[in-house]
Image 1 (spheres, rainbow over the protein chains, first blue to last red):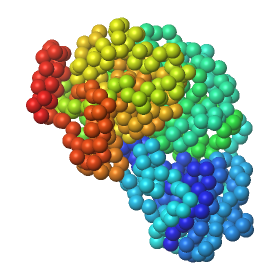
Image 2 (image 1 turned 45 degrees about the vertical axis):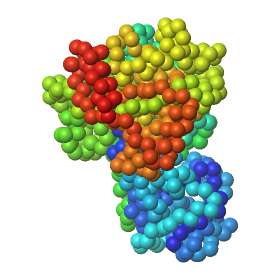
Image 3 (image 1 turned 90 degrees about the horizontal axis):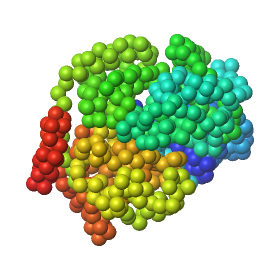
Image 4 (image 1 turned 135 degrees about the vertical axis):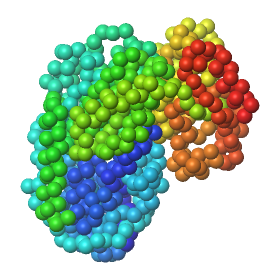
Length: 323
Length: 291
């Protein structure tokens, strides 16, 4: 079995659950931005949850199947078409050799996940098939898929028609709330700026990708006066270059917060004021530019409880799908 | 020097040895992060040493953030007594200063710079009190550097110059990061030099470019067959100025797989260095020149 890429969409990349262990060399974990959607897509077609699939942002690709198989599409809400006929999302369905999978216009969310029974079987790099274009690792020769690519597919497990009850999906409000644990260099901004960061509404900027999501709309931050430490650089938002956490929020020049995501840079010289809790990282991967966002301060107990909830939701999905 | 611990979300602990950069802070951070590695703590997934700090990533389902914090504090006291000596290597890195490619990028992103009227080198020379760009470049390559962090993207080294603090160059980062930087640009931000391992975004001032590949995911470069990343923390680097002809020659040799960087095995002892910087550097250079 193999998939032939007819049209690649805007940016469609092979992703799995990433390659931890190399962040100390500046090679990020990577992998699906919305891990929940990727895992569920795999479960629907009977794959291990860490099998590789396709992540397409804003626009779906067009893909021809070279043999019979099973497919599921999860994540953002985008009409799924098989030879032009509608197919449901969050459901596995059979495909025949020669059929073409296509997509309509994006309705909500940002990224769809396409799993095919057997998983995409391109050569792994450092233990993962995830595409990291900056380091030319994984994917198709280190890049996103392109028209004409033929993607090998592994041996399927036990595919069958499975549907996820959408009651299992997390609902988000307007504005979207992203929970934050303050810390890191939080002390660098004034009390007034700290309060405003949570009180004001932000919107997702057009510069939002796998490396980081930028936000705008809030008041520029004021820094606590200090003599800059040796080696940091003279701007008050500069620090002696250090490591960045996944989900950490840096604010170069104090103007536009950037939340580092799966393809994060591993370090740098801008102060960070805390980090998005792990349970809300998937959510960010589904934000479109101009989405209204509010940052909400939480404590560690809340962050860990949210993490448990997320795990329980995934367990419930596994039970429901017999995965 | 006062150690500061902070949670970075629910999956990381960030440990700052000092707000300011020093080799003492680097060595202390390295010692603790190595102690964490040696302790093989269940749930730890990443240990990232940095210039004057380090970070641990862990799975809070396996070890709670509080328990992780307590373990790190225990290991800090043990690492305080660690020897500040490294068996390492000195590597010669040729640099083509004021090259046309970084110059072009410097000019394209002028509106993001503190001084849109000049170049990054002119700005760096002026704010550090040098009479000319040439004297500034001379200061940049005259004494060796210490790799105090690898990261940002794909094996990018941060380098700290082995000179007295008052002789160290300091420049700010760009006001807003650039969206483009040529591959192998030699940059400068704060008190650090860096070598951009791949093309991409960046906030450091741009001084020149090296023909050496320092990240090769395909591992076809002759000296990167064992691992795709060239530098590791603790490496010592000597920049050597080259002209266009030499740049072209080395680049062709690297691409043909015939280039062997000049490298010598050395030991770096922080106390010996602090006691006699010129003497220590002279010995490092002797080792390199004999290689």
